[in-house]
Image (cartoon, rainbow, N blue to C red):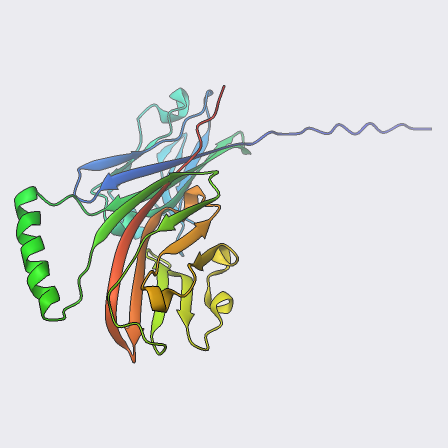
Amino acid sequence: MKMFVVVLVLLQVSHHAFCVEVYEGVESVLLPCQVNTSVSTVVWSREDYKYTTVHLRDQSGDISENQNHYYRNRTSMRADALQSGDLSLTLRKPTIRDSGKYLCTVYRSGQDLSRTEVQLLVTEPPVWPWVLAASLVLLVLLAAVGVIVYKNYRVTVTEGVESVLLPFKTTANMTEDVTVKWRLSGTNRKTVLVFGKGLNNEFKKHSSYRGRTEMKKDPLETGDLSLILKNPVCKDTGVYTCTVYRDGDILAQKILKLLVKRTALVH
C-alpha cells in the first residue's frame, strides 16, 4: 500500500491600516507601508478606480505600463524600497480628488505577504485670520438678504467608539415638504442618509451606511439636522455634506470633515 503525505503550508498575511490627513497645496504627502523583510514586488492601488494601479515596483524597477494616468509622474518610492522594506509611497501635489483608500500589497516570491490600507484625506488649507474676518463680515451680509451660508467644520474621533455626531442646526424654514440629504464626497459619492416625507430612508442609503446612521427626533421642528453615525471606522473618514432642499432649491447646507483615527495597538 502506498502512503501519500500531504503537506499543508499556511501563509500568514499581515494587515495594517493608517489614516493620513494633509492640506491641498502641499508639496507632497507620504503614505506609510513597511515590512521587516526584503520583498520582490509591491503594488499601490485604489479599488474605487477603473484602472486601479497607483504605483508598481518590482525587482526591475518602477513599472508604469498599467499605472492610472491620473498618477503618472506624481508617485515615487525609495530607491532601496524592496531591500529595506520601507515601501512608503510619496504622492506629489495632493488634491481633494486624491482623498480615498489606498492599498499597499506586498509580495515575496509570488506570495501575498502583507497588506496595508491607508485612508488619505486631503482638505482645503486653513484661511488666514484676516481673510477669515473679512469672510465673516461678508457672510453676515449675505445671510441678511437670505443667501445660503456655507460653513466648514472638522470632527475627529477614534475607532471603537459607539457613535459620532456630525452637528448641523439651521434656522431655515423647515416645512414638511423639504428633503434633507447627507452625503460623503469623493470619487464615488455615497448617500449616507435621506430624510423627507414619503421617502424610504434605508433604501436610499449606500449599503455601507445602512443601519448605522440616524437623526435626532423631530428634526424639522427643532432644526437640528445633526447626523449620528454608529460604529465609525477608518474608512468613514472624508468630507460630509448636508443639504436641505425644497422643490429643487437649496435652503441650507453644511460641510464637515470627519477624521476617524485607528485605535493605537498596545504591544
